[in-house]
Each structure stands twice: as C-alpha cells, then as structure tokens.
Image (cartoon, rainbow, N blue to C red; front, top):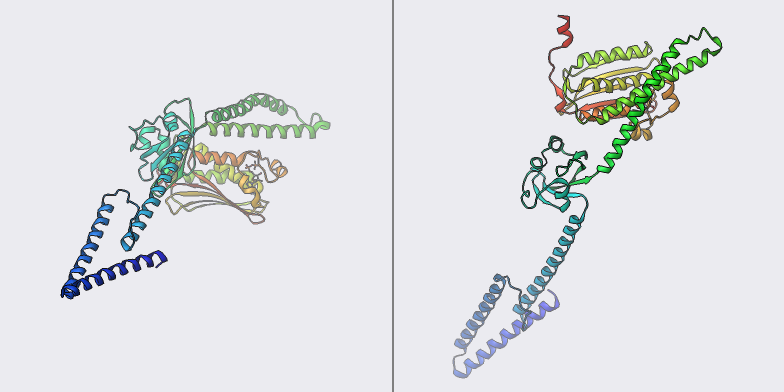
Length: 442
Ligand code: ADP
C-alpha cells in the first residue's frame, strides 16, 4: 500500500469513527445510545452503497470520469480510474496517429501492398498502388481471393507452392505492358503481405541482354561453321610445319562452337516461361546417361547407375536430359582417372525424387559453392578449359531445374568428392508407365 492509499484509508476510517462517535453522543443525550449507534451504522452503510452505485453508473456510461472530489477511499478509487482512463485515451490517440501515418506511408509507396489472409489469400486491405498495378477496386475487392482477381495460372501455382521465392515478370492485370515482381512477406500468424513492384524497365533491360547474347551467339554460328569446315579440309600432314597451329585452331574452333551452343541453350531456357510437361521414363534415361558417361570416360573411371526408385519424372525430356548430362559430364571431366562415379536415382520422403551424380574427384572448396552456378564461374579456369568446359554447364542445369520447380543441391568436400543432386517435388514424379524400349523390342 503506498502513501496516498494509506492516507485515503486513514481519512475514511477517521470519518466513520467520528460519525459513529457523534451518533453515540447524540443517542446518549436523548437516552438511546445503542439505537443511535445502529442508526448511524445503517446511515454509513447506505452512504457506502450510494457511492458504489454512483461509481458503477459512471463506469457503465463509458463517459470520461470527472476528476475526484473530496478525500477517502472512494475519492482514491475515482482518482485511479480517472488516471487510467486518461492514460488509455492518450495511448489510443497515439496509436491512431501511428496507424494514420503508417497508412499514409503505405498509400504513398510506389509498390502495391496487399494485406492477405494467410489461409485463403483473401484481401483485407490494399494501397493505391494496389489499384494501379494489380487493378484492385476499393471497396468491391475487399474480402475477395487474390487468385480469382489476378486470374493468372502462374499466380495460383506460385501461391500453392507456398510463394517462397519471388514471382518474376508477371503481366500487370491493369496494363499487360507493365511487368511485375511479386513477393509474399510473413506479416502475422493470420496475415501476410503481398508486395508487387513495377519491374518493366528492368525486364526490358534483361530482355535486351538476353536477345543480345542470343543474337551474337546465333550470328557467330554461321562463320564458325565455315571456319570449322575449312579447318577440316586442311590436313596437317600436307603442311607438317603448321601442324601444331592447325591442331590448336581446330581445338579452339571446337571450343568456341561448344560455347556458342551452350549460350544458345541458356538463352532458350531463359526465355521459356513454362514447359509442356510429359512423362520422362527414367530407366531409359539412366541407361543413356551411363552410356554417355562411359563414352566420355573411355574406361578411365568406374561408373555405375543405382536405380533405387521405380518412378518416372514429369517434365521436358530434352531439358532434363541436358541437365543430367551436364552433371555426368562434369563428374567424368573433373574426376581423376581410376575415380568412382555413381548416378543414383532415389525417392524422397515427401514423395518426390532425386537424381544424384556422385564422384570421388577433387571436390570444390566451400567458398566457391555459392557462386558455382553463375555463368562462366570456374573454380580453376585452366582446369575447366583443359577438360573442354565452357563454364556454362551448371548455369544450364540450374535453369532447366527451375523450369521444373526443382532445385540443385551441391555437397562437396575438397579431396573427397562431390554430390550434385537434382531434387524434384512430388508433383513431378509419376508411377512408371509402359516402357518404350519394351514396346519397340516387341
Ligand atoms: P565447366 O564447363 O567449367 O565445367 P560448369 O558450370 O559445368 O562449367 O562448372 C563450373 C565449375 O564447377 C567448374 O569449372 C568446376 O570448377 C566446378 N565443378 C563442376 N562439377 C564439378 C565436379 N564434379 N567436381 C569438381 N568440380 C566441379
């Protein structure tokens, strides 16, 4: 109990005591002290009830209490309630001001901000840019599901997959010329925040870059074919003095050809928005990979396939073959002669599947791993060139897997070897169908 409370109690008790003494004295004067004391007690009780009634009435009316008058316990209760009410009013005003400031800031943002319910993606609030970029109408679209308003299969798929990665290059529903980048941010346990940014300029630049690389590669193809044709006609035996130069020219022309082809593959993958998925029978795929690996290795390695999952994949056979073949080719090219290479196809606990290429080659130091899938990034340029690498293999793998919503996992330890795994979700795994080889043999 603090000082003011103690004073209030002392004041109230002293007042009661004075009142009862006065009643007792008055009663003694008229010869009925006990009756006067009882009357005094009843009056005191009545006064207390009246105070409680008054307090309750004020609280129930939800009006602002008046500052307290007088002394005693009831005045103290009223003072405390008055103080609480004033504090909560001030807090409310502060919160209102803060909310207004936040809303004004969110409304002024050039990015569209939409508050969505987490379970159903229903729209709870959006700013002005939400109308401009996503075509949302206020208040008609409040409570509607985002998928129903945007009506883009990519958005529905993206939300169904949990929207962990940003969705890039979506046409704005308000103006298809504008390109958007969508990102879903965790907000509260019940709500999340959708942020849509206008990336039209960035996409134009990106398209220009892509077109430039594709055009340059395409333009280089014809002169290269001519050069290679003439080089093939030159026989080093006819001019033995120039034999090393002719061989070097042939080798470099081959290398340039491979770079041009890889660049064209990468451009094609980058400009493909979606693949037309079909069954990819895995048994023939694994057999073909083993054949390619053995041909490339020329019996310098111990290569085998471990088929541990009787499933097929759903995707583009060409793109998947190119991705897997790149991993196998890297394992063969970077693993020392006598090394061990395994191509393993196995199931995942969630119903998905993974194709893993394991080797006991030189491995990759950990500092290189985050950048290893970038174009032309090499751990050792000389080694890559010597082995006929273009520096584009893993970039092709990553893009091909992205089109299948699959991911590339890389585990590597210098001196012990590497494991490159293509991990597919359950949506891209099928129970095996009829074997095309069996059909042709029959
Ligand atoms: P490259 O054509 O140079 O092989 P990639 O994109 O396929 O280009 O690979 C990038 C780099 O990753 C390579 O230069 C090599 O240093 C490293 N790398 C890839 N696969 C392996 C592997 N199995 N073992 C060791 N290093 C590897």
